Each structure stands twice: as structure tokens, then as C-alpha cells.
Length: 337
Ligand SMILES: Cc1cc2nc3c(=O)[nH]c(=O)nc-3n(C[C@H](O)[C@H](O)[C@H](O)COP(=O)(O)O)c2cc1C
Image 1 (cartoon, rainbow, N blue to C red):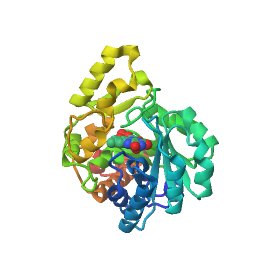
Image 2 (cartoon, rainbow, N blue to C red; image 1 turned 60 degrees about the vertical axis):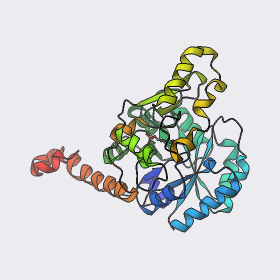
Image 3 (cartoon, protein in one colour; image 1 turned 30 degrees about the vertical axis):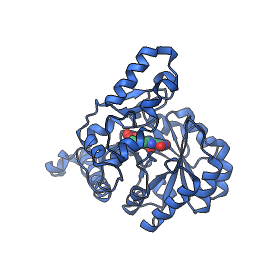
Image 4 (cartoon, rainbow, N blue to C red; image 1 turned 45 degrees about the vertical axis):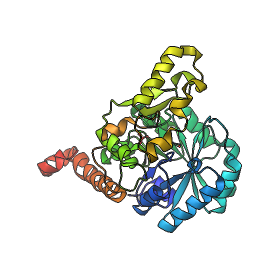
């Protein structure tokens, strides 16, 4: 499939694996890129720029296809040395950076001087337009369904994507709630040039996380995520568990007086406990509503091949089947959804 995104990033399929803390290691990024998508290493999971450079080198040993690095500008307990991370990314010859969180404006000159294409993740049309204005090459439009930080507008993709299409000149991918060929085709229909998946890629053989996490995603339904940190205007969609229930209880008790320190135990240092140790009650870790659409743990290649084959069938058979010559098509073809 050829879209503005496959052309821009030199990839075969319009599928991106979004940066994921403690998930986006070289193994997953390489598997996605080898399967024809765009794999992304999560920059800040590597504690120093030197470690990030090593992770990039490890990924390059596993794939000769393009892959990118995610840089997240979020309020954290201590700000990371972003200029040094960008220097490492440039020195390693990375040509795609997925930025997220706060605007990457102040870092754009350094990224652009490195010949890097920047795709910024945005949860609103106004932030997407700002990204376009400051020179981002593409946008990942992240709806309210998404795992991670959906922003504070609560705008689902059914509205957000067509609105982005109305306003943006640069290409964008749909992010949040994307799981399969139906998601991809729907995203393309709403004006996107591809899709970004987070949660779905965790339930794959190659995702370097504890088996408990993958099993929990298969078991979870679309009703099992919760929104935390709303009162701090740092909303995160997470998979419910005992730690999250404690967190929500503290939020209820503190009300408007809530401070980040109050929920430190339920949000800080949780990722290694979940992703490495498989402690599923440790606290808040990002997870999308799309968990309800995850029913198996395929290899990344099986997942991407299935998405592309089903997308072709949906477009060629199901959708064209609705047009004037529908009667000429076999009934079985019309049943595919
Ligand atoms: C476990 C997990 C960790 C994530 N960590 C990050 C991160 O560090 N930086 C970032 O920009 N996005 C992060 N995300 C968001 C994803 O990149 C992506 O935008 C999101 O998962 C899309 O929604 P989906 O989960 O419905 O596919 C994370 C998502 C998950 C599920």
C-alpha cells in the first residue's frame, strides 16, 4: 500500500509502532520495521543518551530497514537532558523522530539540522496545526481511546480524524484504538495516511515484556481501562488493577487538593515492575481501550501481514461490494468485515 506516510518514511506498510515506555526496545522496533512498518525505540526508557545510542546500535544489528526514536516531553519528576538525547539520535543517523507531550518547537532546529523527519503526536486539531506551523513533517492524531495520555479534550477519533483532515496540509496517521484492518481502512477513509498502534503491539511474541502483560491484554475487555491524574491535567489511560484502584481512591479523597506526590507510589517506577517482573497490580501503566479487540498474541509479522491482507479484502470486496455492481460479486466476499 502506498500513502504519503509510506513515501515519507520509506516503509512498505502505513503502520507505525508508537513509542512505549519499557516496551519500545530494539527487539520490538526491529520486528516492526522488518515486517514493513515503522518501529520506534522509546528514547527516555534508556536512562542516558549513551544508553540510547547503544539501543539504536542494537536495533541496527537486527534490521536494515528504517526505524525511529520517540522523544516524550512530559512533566516528569526530573527533566531529562533533551539536547543530549537529540545529539545521540543525530550521531546514530536516525532519520525519524516521534515527538510527544509538549510542543517540540524549541528542539525543531536541532532535529531538522540532522535531516530528521518529525512526526508529533497530538490529541487535538489545534495542537496538530501548531505542529504543522513549527515545521513538523507529519502528525500522529491520538484520539480519546488511546493508551497513554489522551489530553484533556476527550475527543474520540471518529470526530478528531475527519476534523484533522479538514484542517491539516501535512499527512497524519490515526492513533488510539487502532488494532486491525478495520481500524486501518476506517482511518484511511477518514483522511489519515496510515495508523499508529501502541497497545496492540504489546501483545505480540516479540514485545520484550513479561508474559503476564500479554495475557492481561488478551483477557481485558474494552471496559477495563481507567483515566487517572485527571485532576492534575495530566490524564493517562491505564489498565485497571489494584494499584490503580488505590490511586483512584486517593484522587477521590483528596479532590481538588490532589498533588502528584500523593500518588507517587502508584505512578512512579511502575513500568519495570509491570513489564519486567509481571506484577500486574503494581499501579498505573498505559493501556488503550483497544485491549477489547486483542484476542491473540501473534508475531509482529503475522499481525502486520494479517492487517494488510484483510485491509485489501475489505477495500476490494466489502467496500466495493456496496457500490452499483454489488450484485455481481460473490456473497461470501460481502460478508468479510
Ligand atoms: C504501555 C504504553 C506505554 C506508552 N509510553 C509512551 C511513551 O513513553 N511516549 C509516548 O509518546 N507515547 C507512549 N504511549 C502511547 C503510544 O505511543 C500510542 O500513542 C498509544 O498507545 C496509541 O493508542 P493505542 O494504545 O490505543 O494504540 C504508550 C502507550 C502504551 C500502551
